[in-house]
Image (cartoon, rainbow over all chains, first blue to last red; front, side, top):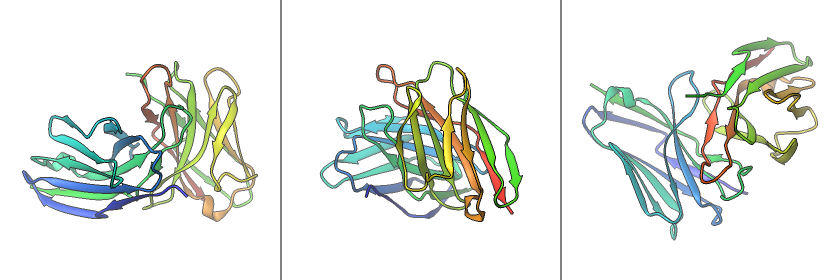
Length: 114
Length: 115
């Protein structure tokens, strides 16, 4: 069945360092890849997404890259700050078709130390 | 900015009891979802709903689960006879579905504890 693998499960960095989280998806029909940030006890919030017709997308300190051939996509956070500490989930979906579900990775707990 | 809302925020129930979790999606959204997250685990898809019917459901969504949109604003998840393993955070999500707006927005969740 559909599956998304996410690594690492935990990541600890010093403030100002970069953080990279990697995901692999199994369904080659997947063409939409959002990343959600979830702070403790709160709802998942979309931070960036990418569609399969694009190889890279950047929004300030956050960037996402996609390798369709290898079925990999990654989240890059530069100049990390303590407020970046949270659990990050990657997900994959198939568009168009708004009713298509998100398949989530297992999450990465990022800790940014001052 | 409009948000998805959910009630209650916490629900404690006895095994075998029925629970109804409520969600108010964003008003102009057309697609609705329920996900669950067992403590410390990934977010798992339960069901999607469009045009007043279920469009897809996962293996988790068995006969004990049902969804309903009883009026123009609410979207509910009912668990008929709760089991201990139903203890989880349940998230509702909605999606506009019109044009290129395909982001799912999540509610704050209902933490369900089955004793």
